[in-house]
Amino acid sequence: MRKFLILIAFAVLLLVPANVLEVQGALGLLNTIGGTQGSGNDQFNRPRAVAVDNAGNIYVADDENHRVQIFNSALVYQNTIGGTQGSGNNQFNEPEGVAVDGSGNIYVADAINHRVQIFNSALVYQNTIGGTKGSGDNQFDRPEGVAVDGSGNIYVADTGNHRVQIFNSALVYQNTIGTGTSGSGNNQLSSPHGVAVDSAGNIYVADGSNHRVQIFNSALVYQNTIGGIDGSGNDQLSSPHGVAVDGSGDIYVADAGNKRVQIFNSALVYQSTVGPSITGSGNDQFNAVQGLAVDGAQKLYVTDFGALHRVLIFTIAPETSGLFAMAVSPNEINLSWNTSDGGGTSIAGHKIERDSGGGFSVLVANTGSTSTTFSDMGLSPETKYNYRVSGINALGVIGPVSNEFDSTTFTEGDSAIFMEVQNIEEKLDGDRPSLITQIVDTLSSIVTDIGTILGILQDEDKGLDAIKSQLVSIEEKLDVLIEAMPPAFKEKECGKFQKDADKAIKKGDEVPPEIIAKLEICAELYP
Image 1 (cartoon, helix red, strand yellow):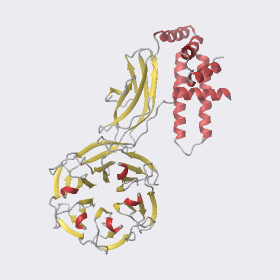
Image 2 (cartoon, one colour):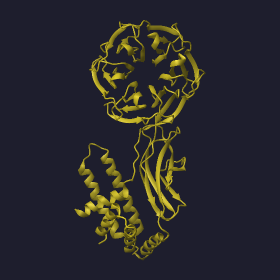
Image 3 (cartoon, helix red, strand yellow):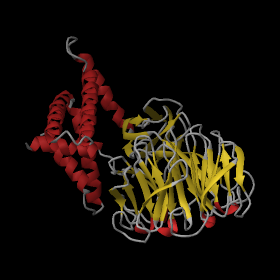
Image 4 (cartoon, one colour):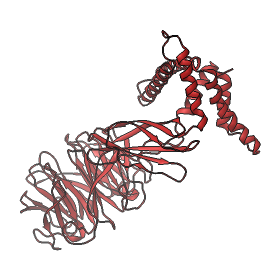
């Protein structure tokens, strides 16, 4: 039993990376619209909301320019609705919400005019809902959000009245979600800013001042809540403004107070975050996140409402994990890792970064290959190198970095050990399998077993028995490997640990716990 535990400890000491980076999400920045404050085409003044139609055209509610700008799927400016502050048809006063239906009709929540204006696909004004400030049916108090379902029903976040009003495709009032007064109970809302509808007719309301998203079914019956606590943890929200749902039922929330987007699956379980919860102008930072939209091509559109005046477009990014680095000579370290496209665009290359003591720098900007191995050559002997890798998909989107893994190159004399192994191999009977082949095959099989264990740990349906089975397999293979190793090889490996301990003692320092652990393992394995 002790040997079994020692082998597990040895595997942990050798194979677990020293520092695993927290991944903020499986979305990478694809592109940006705007970024300059102004009133020209492709410029914004505090963009509030965004919508995307079936053809990939993008509609941006450009709040303080009192207009909606339209861009095609290539992000090229196409046209504008409005542009003059006023209360007439085709004029707006702070448009804060926009939606588009399957026929290309455009719905604009014209907040200060307390109405929703409707335009056809040719951008010709068609009709208006509301227009009078009030709390009655068909009246609004600063509507900030609008959504349309597959049947043409229209959902309006009537922010100042703490409710969502619903109208049919003929613009006739149908029903209301909320009581019309601010409250925190189920079926009560407090300053709802955004609204979305999924393909099943479920309604999602960004309940701003209650720091939550409330969910209702197509019969308007309360179903569930995301958040509800003003905080910055996962599953906590702070003044959410926008909400969107994709075709798989994943829910995207513009967590405005935390300057981020949180993503939940259809079971309302937290999945990931875009944005680090700090104000910034980087590719994954927001100044003031407000509106959201998702399209059928797995792209997320986010309006950055504050000083940056832009729309950020994200897509599913590659996911890289399981980075492993192993020195094979005084001048070479071999890397291997796993990369998944995450369900998005196919992998096209990898970015490799290296740190030899002064911080990470780019070793290879793009390998241009789907290969998940790399040899870093021309290195200095007895030097520690740390690595991390990011996948790059065919759209050029760079995914989150992998775990970090370091390795130290051999001293110049270490290569003699491998020569000894080769000499021993030559003396072996020709009918016996090659010693080097046996060692390499056994190590490869052990790495496979460890990969299986990592997979088990990520699968809730598999338990400890499956993990124990794999660990027994590793123990048996390590026994084979230990028997195969020539004595000089064993002495050299454990001798390194003893030298490290001796150095610490000479300096009057305590021997590091990890060195003590490795020496104990050596004593157990090589008595």
